[in-house]
Image (cartoon, rainbow, N blue to C red; front, side, top):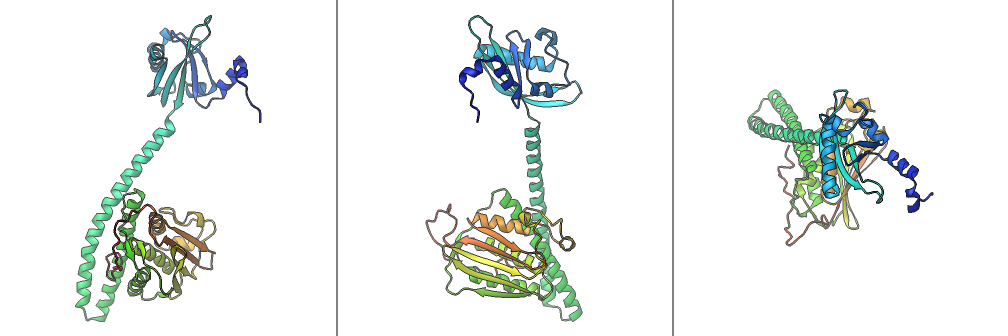
Length: 383
């Protein structure tokens, strides 16, 4: 590696080369506002403006750039530097360029005059990022409001369907009501996932931590899914003597249900879906495995991204889905200080392993421990 000695910087050619290679626009001005030097980046940024090198500052008094530079020079003359500021420059092409501008005094020796160095940075990427963030915040707000409204309406619809089903004896009408109830349950699952995704993405979710019997929780999830998906074959293998886990039982139920829902959706009708629960040292692992279509290697790095659907597999694209469920699983796992991992081969099924620390998230401060078995009829589990 070539090193530069401080004495080398005294070489004017070395200084000019450093100036030319700078990634931001740099101008050198005399104290009366005349531009005496500009680098390549400044020429590119301001290239559609009239050439300034041959013009004196007073001749460009009406130019927005000249007014901006005059302010910077005046501030540098008084303070020795100019605080960063932002401005919109109208270029000769009619386009507007958002820039950030700062300046400092370049002192010469006693025989030469002082100059002002002005740094100009293109702020277009920053502004685009700010606009994108604002659009994203608006999207999340609209999504949350719409999801709340749909959930409230669907809760009433499902309640009436359950009442009608309880009193219906005609087999044909019962089948219709059961189908409507199942479809409504799918809508509620989607709405819950949308709300969870929005909350977890916004870092606004607080975990309701308590000692949780994960084995019982898995049994409850399986019971509910067997009820609303009678064609599914869900098999459990739960290690005896598992410890209670300090976790948010409702959130874990949502994550496990999403994994099992996915396994059923992407498997042939009636195919086995296996749920294994076991301890590994200081973590508890819940694995959901199927023998379905599997996941293409190209899709695997992105399956936990929000709203991602496979662009590789036509079979996956034909199935209904929002692309939210797995992103919610990942967010819930990480909120607990845990992980979720995937093992899959296309055409040979998939296995998702959700691991959470038995002692709970490391950031959780526990002053009291509330022993709570996850309720069988929890609202997180109901269809």
